[in-house]
Image 1 (cartoon, helix red, strand yellow):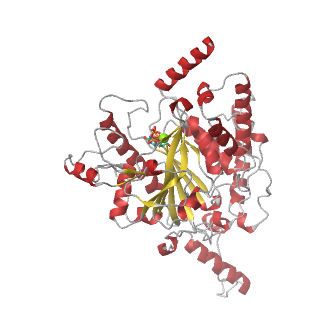
Image 2 (image 1 turned 45 degrees about the vertical axis):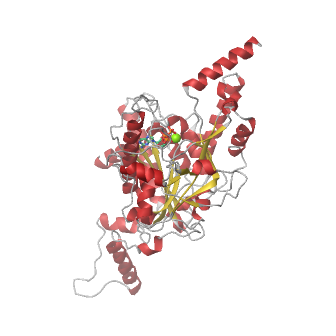
Length: 505
Ligand SMILES: Nc1nc2c(ncn2[C@@H]2O[C@H](COP(=O)(O)OP(=O)(O)OP(=O)(O)O)[C@@H](O)[C@H]2O)c(=O)[nH]1
Ligand SMILES: [Mg+2]
C-alpha cells in the first residue's frame, strides 16, 4: 500500500497543470528511434520509464476504484514514447560509471553468501569478479571526483565537448515562452551539452509562467515541442485571417517582419528537436513589487531597486544550477525576437572570458524603424568616474537618464551593420540580455551584485567586478540581437490617430 501511495504521489506531482493547445498523446518524436531498451547507454532511462508505466497503470486502476467507476478526466496522458538519448554527453559526469539497477539491488537487501558453513568459498571465479565489480560500484555510488582544471572553457567549446549552463530569469513571461523556446531549439550548440535552468519569480496573480514553462519543457525533452508550436502557429494564422492581427504590425518595416517570419519557418537545423541535457525549473519569490509599467518621478531610484532584485534572482539561479562540469554559463532574457542560432559558438569563439552581443529593437516606421536598446553595455569614461566620486556610496548610476551624464561609449551606439560582426571591443559594464561567461568566474565568486558595487548593480556591476578580478570583458558592436517591440501607450495613441486619418482618406 505504501508503495502504491508513493507511486500515486509521484504521478500526481508530475501531472501537467497547463493545457497546451494540442493533443499531447498524439505527439511522438519525429525521425528518431524510439526504443528505450535497445542500447546500453539508455540503461538509465529504462527502469524509470518502466516504473512510470507500471505506476500509470496502478494510478489509473486505483483512481477508477476510488471514483466508484465514474469516468476520470485525464488532463494529460503521459507521453507514450520517450526520446532515445544516444549521446554519452547526456550521461557523463553525474555518477557516470554506475548502473542504477545494480546499485538498487543492494538497497533491496540482496545478500551475498561468501562462505559455506564449512568455511569454503562458494563463489566461482566469474561470480567473484562480478561481486567485486558490483561492490566497487556500490562504494562509488555516492562519491564522484571532478578535476576542475578540465572545465576552464575554450573558444572551441562545441568541438571540445564543453558543457554550458543556460540560465533564463522569468517573471510574468507566459506570453513570450513560445518565442523563447523556439530560440532555444534553434541553438546550434549541441543540445546534449546544454543544461537549461529557469528561475521564475514574483509573477502577478493569475500569471501561469511556471505551469506553462513546465509543460513546454516536457514537450521539449520529448522532442515534440516543435509540433506543439506548429499547431499553435496554425491557430494564430487562422486568427490573422479573421482580421485579428496586432494592429501595430501594419506600421513595422516589412523587411524586418519578413526576417522574423523566415527565422521561425522550416527548414530548421538538423538537431532542432533534440532534447537538452537537462531542464531545471526553480521558483523563488523575492518580494519584487515594482511592476513593468511602473514609472513616476522617482523612476531613476526605482531602476536601482529593480536591478538589485534582478541581481538576487540571478545569483540564486547560478548558485543552485551551476555544476562542477560546466565550463560556460550563458544568460539569456526571454524577450528576444531575433538571434542567430549560433550565438553561443559565436560569442565563445572570441577568446574572451565574458562576451555580449549588441542589442537593438525594431520600432514602427513612423518612429525611425529601429533603436539602440540595451544601454548597459559600455566602456567606462572619466566623466562617469568623476560623477561616481560625488555620489552616495549606495547610489546606482543608471544609463540613459539625464540625472547621470556619463558620456560613456555605449556598445549599442557604435553599431554599423555593414561592418564585420566578429569585431570585438573591451567593455566595463555589460547588459543582461545575452551574456556568455566562463563558469570559472562564478566559481571565483564573481556575481551579479544585489548591492551597490562601484555605483552599479546587477549585470553592469558584474562586468566591473569581472574586470577588477582580471578577466577580459568584451562586446560585439556589429553582431545584433533584436529585443521584442511592445508598443507604449504613446505609440498606441499614435497608431490609433493614423488609423483614423487613413479612414478619413
Ligand atoms: N526571476 C526573475 N526574472 C525577471 C524579473 N524581472 C524580469 N525578469 C526576467 O528577466 C528578463 C529581462 O527582463 P525585462 O523586464 O525584459 O528587463 P529589461 O530587458 O532589462 O527591461 P525592458 O525590456 O525594458 O522591460 C526577462 O526574461 C524577464 O522575464 C524578476 O524580478 N525575477
Ligand atoms: Mg527585456
